[in-house]
Image: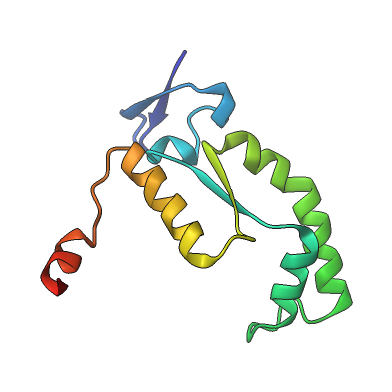
Length: 118
């Protein structure tokens, strides 16, 4: 099924393919790949408790984060092409993201910089 996006004037602006797995013609149709970066709730709560941003510092904030994670992460997982668990070292997470980008047909944006450093 194909959906149509309507411009304010009522003219059809563009179209997208309906994909029930990705909730139709929503924000996901703009991306070549959708990646969910996830972590266990305890790790997320530890991360937010130890950052400069004040949200997450109170018990009320952390309860909201845990509840929101329980409610929305399954929906995000359902719409994702790939899930990367961020308990791995940062370089492994970056490598996994690069692999997703390459699989989606994107070249390495830093390749030319790396070549010049060698």
